[in-house]
Image 1 (cartoon, rainbow over the protein chains, first blue to last red):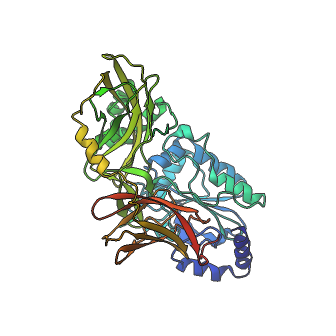
Image 2: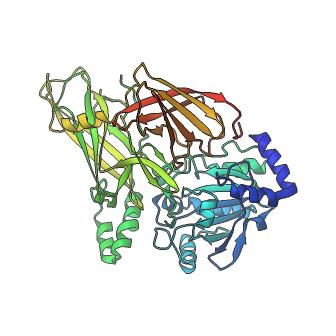
Length: 209
Length: 303
């Protein structure tokens, strides 16, 4: 697996675009060790963000639904905000992605999302509004939260749960292993990611039907 | 017979209540009055949580009495509102299985929960495994041999669960049941629930069956030689993230056997030594599957 990842990373350095296009057409959507598919989405301040603009940085994608009890677990405990603050201060780009369709739980307009971020004291790099679910389906985002980590050469290095305790109970957070921080710490230290995937846990993403 | 499987204890916390109230009541009622009233008079472990609007939970006993030293089957009966569901031991793509935290009298032991086979709850691009309408999650409880006839014992449990429709609500309920100690027990009025639940428990496959599994490329191929033709069997994996839950199930019927093609999960990065799960036939009977996986041909997955 590590061999494959390195190989993909090397290939990716030479011809990132070709591999990106290939992986978009892959039946699996995204897969750890392969190039993270390019996407474009508008954030809650009206800026268009593209994944490829963040080459050279680690990128975290956090699927979000403000009415989902699993999302609430990590926001009301301030766990998510703490992670956002910690990793963005270390140069990581953190995107909160909202793929809830209009009329579905978690759907927000741009001003509503900005109000939420302010109220929650959340500080992702940006909150991406994906009401059509394009980015979500491209990544096969299943749950809220569902976390992805992309390395500086654009390879997906983590796809799964935020941590090891699949509950809605805030009391479980301190003793849970945070897979996102672990992946970032290991990758930054030049080590292979010891848990590159896990079962994402949470509410299903509320896509348009 | 009794395998102890206790779930981690987790205390009810005041914060949980406030948050639950904040989440559902304040938002849905939207009145300051309602929220203030609720905050002033909380009843921890109360039956007024929002999740309780969608599911009724009850602790029931198969027998009407405790017999010293003899296993007794108790069950957690979920009666779900239409359109709502809760989850199997492997919930599939989202959700969470109910967790039971027993509070047993001294000397009592509880065995593992027996999970009836679930339904595949498909909402593309996802599929979950769970229960709609009613389900009974039963477990054996063994009282100590030294109990005096005529005494009463209280068995209690906290159940934490998630109920979902298009949205999900976590709930927790404290349940209890008092039973008298007798030398002989009779069936309780809930006995029928246990008989119905047992019919949905997976059983060992008949010895004449031959079950095998192979890892071939992007899929596991599960072969069941039953000697009979079986229609539309369904496979439910015991472990999460081994197969793509939402992938269409490709089944081929041969004379006397069935072949299921199960697409591997993209989260499965290593080969698995065994495939575990249950197979449910159109007859409504469920059988345990626990077979070694032979590694045929090179897989397209990183190994």
